[in-house]
Image (cartoon, rainbow over all chains, first blue to last red; front, side):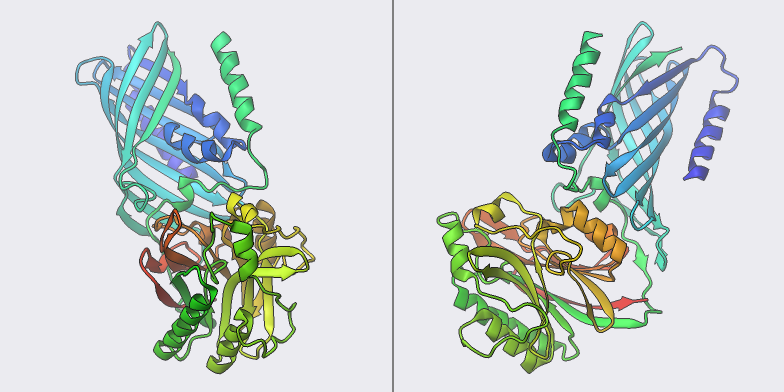
Length: 190
Length: 300
């Protein structure tokens, strides 16, 4: 996980270097914060879908290199429930075909599902596509998007395991075959 | 500013709504690509079968069905060590007409471990299944209502091939239908083997859970502290099949997920039944009609 964080920071730094007129955006997903606490059962089950499956403290850093292209990295850290802690990092780019508001994005998300009691890590890397809409109000912005994962690579610190890979449109295809998530980010532009 | 205050207040209300005793599994618990768990170097093995049974409302029909399935499994796999049936498998899980009266009518007394099951009365579920365990030389686990005086417990019993009650576990963590059925939850106590039930089968440490017990934070913590190689999990669950088994990952242990299928009053059970390895990979199973799933549990 540390290597993934360092890689994203280095790539992000390289991506933003040399564009002094570009815009930096720092934001957060407010719906993710309460999810690391003990909510009512059904809220705990379903609200994460509206929070982009982010839990707890989170920060999003975006870099608008030109009106059509932006880089973005996201970090979220929080407990999923009493037994598991989740660290996740996302990195990717957004393309604005009409110069403003509407965009499409392509990201990769790496997360560590850590069982605090057995001290076993389950790591996953998943590419996903996004479609979003961003509203700028002065320096303030609200960014809403739909995300759809399509593949996954998994590995674990558990002894005697080897990685697995597969298509991944939903964590529970028996219940719902395709499950996009929604993310809302609020923040400031500099 | 006013909106921020409203949001914070709303967040506090949400925080105060949940129970710290209940683990609500997330989509991350069941996310991922199946991992490859290499058990080739294992030193202990257990041949197990997990049952998915279509239950009749009539107890005698279910007992005959159980005996038939036991005979079938033993015929197909003479090496079988352990057969696991679902929760309260002697009848419907929930009868909306008279939930309490119905469950009381199915229930029996169960001797405490390690007492021997008597040979009479002949129509007793415990007697008939214990006789099968002896005749077939196999451990059998099944769920049933247990009568203790005026109390009714939702119990999972493990019968050994020597006719003893090797272990029994009483359900701790209830859902509404357990209460409606007139069951009493077991008291959480690490010193009570009826609420924290870990037993040894062929050198493999097996913890016993009934359905929503898996969401009990106290019980999960106790089992993780004491360690288990195998989770014997009897359920009455209508949920569809998973790609990854959250329970195996909760304990990093093998799991036998024994369930029921078919229509019972307003509830349609999808017949999700499987055996999963400690990495959460489902080795055999999925949704379906009445059947059994067979696997060899291998422990390093």
